[in-house]
Length: 135
Image (cartoon, rainbow, N blue to C red):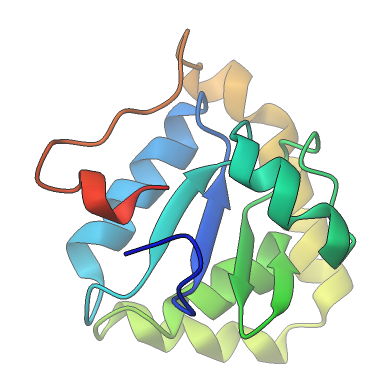
């Protein structure tokens, strides 16, 4: 897959242990291998995200770029659920929770994730079999 493909891109904090585990979870439960992945620390993030109004220096959020739009925080997490197999895809029902409440919970967890789960000294490195999905 090339970076210019129309396939959605999930940007994540490449040194965050929770984020790396989340990417691995998505890879294991995705309905079809359509998502591509890139770290927020990557040159691609610095190129793609600012025109969409997203600061790639903000490492406290997942960002899903799909159909020319960017979703962040809880909205990105729920949008990712559309790409997962059941029962995980059922998490889309969380749309009914008002976004300010969802984002409050997301931000609370994000602010503590390094303290609770630690972080890596370098960005997550995919296995050779998955490398083509990472940009």
